[in-house]
Length: 329
Image 1 (cartoon, helix red, strand yellow):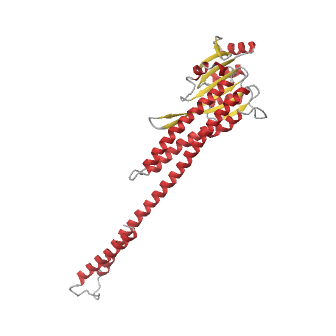
Image 2 (cartoon, one colour; image 1 turned 180 degrees about the vertical axis):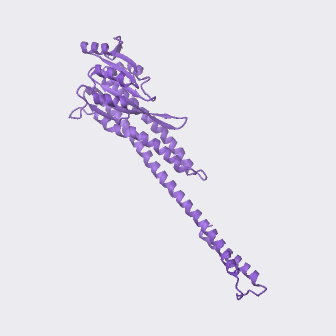
Image 3 (cartoon, helix red, strand yellow; image 1 turned 60 degrees about the vertical axis):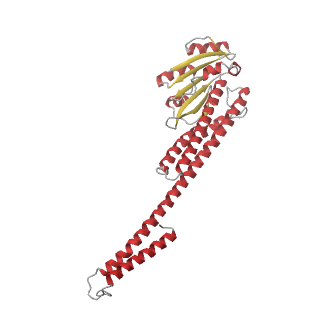
């Protein structure tokens, strides 16, 4: 559905037609200002009507409706299509949810299309309307503000994930609290990998928006805004450094935990083997003297039975001391 449609001139919102078609026609006729239209989870029918009016490319329209796209910037003849992944951290269950945000940028319009409940645009419009000097740079100023807000949210999520990882590391390597550690590490790693898929692919589009010349130059972006986009790219680089560090540290923690488990299993096997040896020796001696043969050493001697018991005890004590000294028990 259409969330809002506003007309802007000289960085300020002005009264204009409520219908987006009339608003777009008015700013194009006047030759100044732009229209900012916001949509949330549009259906195919709703978006087809908007796309036809704005002359959007069919491939970009298909991506905007289906969502689940990789962060990117695509340039068409009359528009620039940008895809961003939004991220939000939920303190209650310590999880990260990923949404999707598309921006269509043209000569006299900017269109934001969001998918999923995690939208960073709820207060962005009102905040931007309080910065007329930024909005005066045209519709690309909205693209910058959206990118800046999304990357700032990435920084917040990365900070929360770092805190959670510190707590997880402390729990895993605390004595007696390593049960189920591999499952916890793997679950956390899935969170980080999902977040990484949102941040890392955005680096190339962010850098592209900073270029002012050449084939990779993005149209409809004023030269005055390129330093702003460089600032966004710098913040995104910091986020990616944190995310890469989290991913590497998680891999190291998982490897250390598996090594810890392997060592513990080896200790358990040594203990089992030692006790098995302690049980095997008297069992063997008893088995030998339990055979039905008449001619066996010390079979008729009165001290034969206590001698056999003494031999069993002596061998068991000797093995126990040997295993204890070797660290098997």
